[in-house]
Length: 195
Length: 163
Image (cartoon, rainbow over all chains, first blue to last red; front, side, top):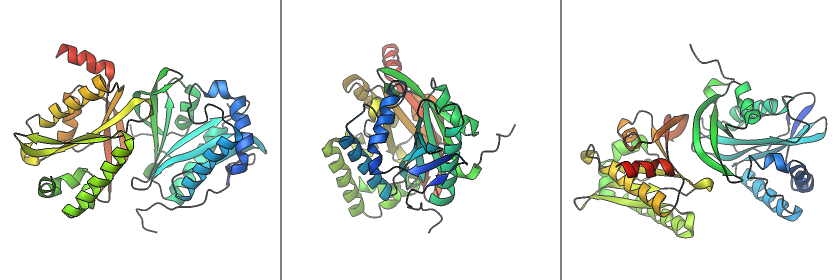
């Protein structure tokens, strides 16, 4: 391995805590994944385009197969989050860029699992893994500035906001200003900024 | 075009990652052909040559419009022709087209933090500075910070009206 190259690895099972496990998303998860999207559709569709609208199991399998193929090329990793064996949400690296050694993160939780620190701990775990095992140097998280619960996740980890990308997304006809956060390998976990 | 690129190699490759891959004119022609094929398959991107008094001066282009109508503009200019407003005016023209004719909503320009002439373009055109991407670019085995600038359609229309 060269110091400036990323590693292409299988998506691992990551143990986040005694109760939380990230397991690689598989083809046969299509049905439970769709059910989780349907159960949370109204809340999620304000912020996300990826799992919307709910599709058939067959279409979901196809999308999942495409994701898995991208994963084999080292372009992304997709996990399901389980709390004590119950499906709680998803977290993923998509758009891993080998040249710039960066990745973008996407995540969402099902109703009933929010507000317990599950996503904060999950995000911490996948960033740890990406810096130490994939050899990435930069991990980006973007969320609408009006989605406080989502922005609070990188903020609780001390990840700096670099920019607000004005009006850069449109969801359900609503124009969103996107806060853009980046975790950097040379400052991880982040030290507080110098005074 | 190759002549201008090759002559400007040392300063162009300081900021633009693709320059180092072009060692010969044949490399560059092959690169251009790949880009053309991508554009033909409609990814929406386009590149233009800038001519100054009939002479090749540089290039300006834009990438694939992302979802939500965001698009990024890139450019370079021969060192000996800098400081005359050539790129500022060229980029202005491109923005007119993107916003007035193609109906795009948001234009992004990213420039290396240390590349002041390049940053001057969005700054002179009234772009808003949104932030800094730490280690956002990789050129010549080094990571560099990129400044992010944006222009929104209504801001450009207002600017055009006042011009």
